[in-house]
Length: 348
Image 1: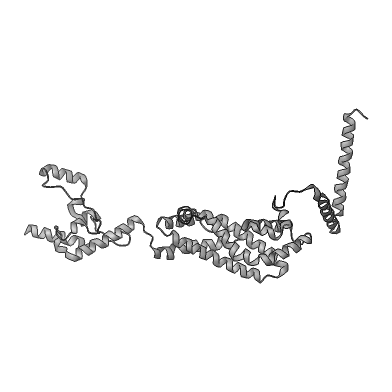
Image 2 (image 1 turned 45 degrees about the vertical axis):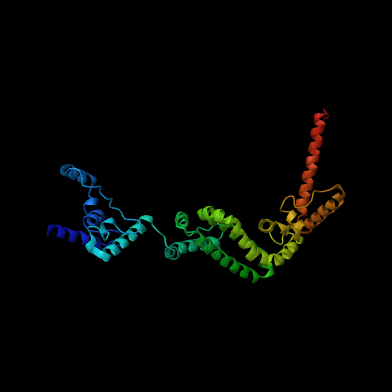
């Protein structure tokens, strides 16, 4: 009778206790003691009992979950056999919950509902910020989100979402540029280019783990190159044939746009696609070194004519005073040089 009651008590242990969401509700005696009985008692207590009772009859089975999700204490043929299918189901549920808790698993649903929305919001802010703006996001939190998703094998989905997100943004930028009037077209293209390149300086480092362990390893590419290619395909290629004539016109009319704007655009276009140099070699050569072939002696007359033309244009745009100042500075330099030469020869 006593053995039978103990057997019934052991059979009900696995069935009765289920964990809550925080694993806090497994009984007052703790998970191991309540569920697995004496096998999970402190090691010191077991050693003392063993010494008093003499050597054990056989080896003690470890009280850990099996690989198939069934606890040894709840196996059908063991002491808990009277629990039946309900005991096995309870053990499987407990084991699955424990594994998820210990492994901190991020499911695809977790990724879509919790992790990607955080990344999506941060990317939005980075893509639309103006230079010098303060962005109220936690870079550490975003970096951590990316790291966890990479560790949980969500790199492919995250990369796909990132490319789709930035592509949609660039398509909106392209439509806004198409609606721009010619007198604002160059300036707005410059803003779009600068804003995007500035955003990449933050986006690429935030996704460094995805870049290292997925893009470089599996795709044999680089994230920064991929994102620059997106701007080339969805913005620059669609506007280059409208933009280049406006740039050439602005070049022929000094100071129609600021020199810094012209330099930014020309250097940016060269970064996006170096072969665009062939569309306007003279324009690119003013901002990119070694674009044109080396000067040759037979073309010195032509170079001199171009310099004279530039000087006439400067004078026509109100730079005569500066030109005279430079002339006076040159005359003074010549005079001082002659004086120094005469002094060195002993003439007074």
